[in-house]
Image (cartoon, rainbow, N blue to C red):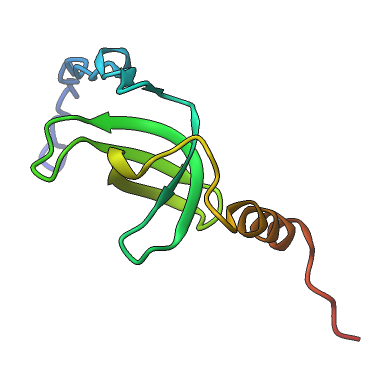
Length: 111
């Protein structure tokens, strides 16, 4: 049979499972603050932020840094731990309630 080709056997390469880094090994508490705790902070532009702590970075060159999921500005922010506080600054509660109101109210539909 002149026109037939031999079929190759398909072999699958074994894939090694990747090693994943455990989040449990990361720091859970630093200077009285814990992961998941709600804190107030001031940004570099002197804006007010509020959110829950996600992670700590104690070995940063600027000083201990905390990563926060911000509820007011909607996103992750990294800030110095010394600016974090459990007490709201002046005007903080108003700013938080305004941001929550904007996120819950649907825009008016055009007719």
